[in-house]
Length: 163
Image (cartoon, rainbow, N blue to C red; front, side):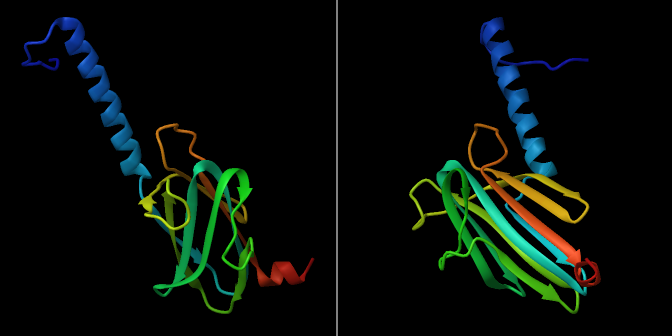
């Protein structure tokens, strides 16, 4: 049982349209698997944490970190391999927890620069290896999956103090 096309297009065009349709479906499924523009990260109790971001794109990248619905840090930047910074110039957002904490991360980009308007980026990579979590986004069709790369390092306070 195959796909039947009810078009009056020549066979070579039907094949082309079917191929494009399948590619679009593949992209859609990839977006559904990861495809969100926000992320939630949980920091365990008695831990230190540090967020940092790098931009790898021609469009302006922005990451907003919120806790309990209120923004606590916003990173922005543009260019290839450019360390993103907060308004005051800080390139990291760090802290420590006594109780577990949860942070919401919102990934956006603007082709018009830091004043916007902003469009949602798509999270394409979300991986944790040991104490390091890496989250990467895509804002375009170049499919390099690195337009923003956020790094979160979390360590237990007892491990930090014992070194």
